[in-house]
Image 1 (cartoon, rainbow, N blue to C red):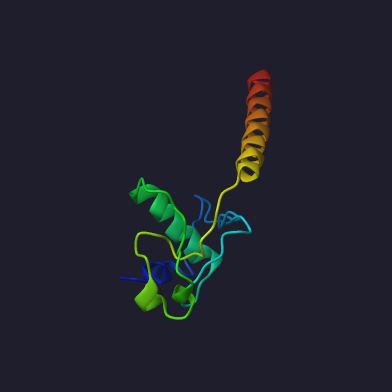
Image 2: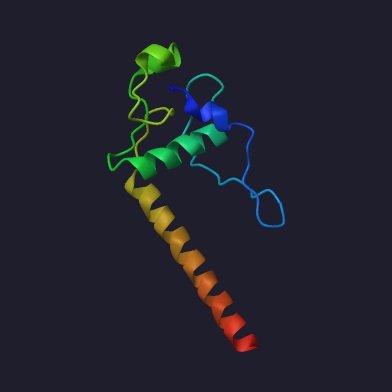
Length: 115
């Protein structure tokens, strides 16, 4: 199916206590295209592309995909507009990872001390 992501719309992940897990936020430059494009379906498409292919993810390169995605769709790419990841984007993400690692380390140390 060309638009398999639509089958996942309206579904959410939940934890063991059946609380819905908040969906992650995508970068502002990542915008979906195609019929009924939503953040959730875009997240599914990007996650699937990362999981199933080692090729770079660049999005749909043809502007015509906006008009008729059934004809101009590049099936090897997720349903999003073409985008470029800059060095600044990478640096910001590295900073976020370092912050989360520090918080995790602090939490683990606090847990170890409380035991």
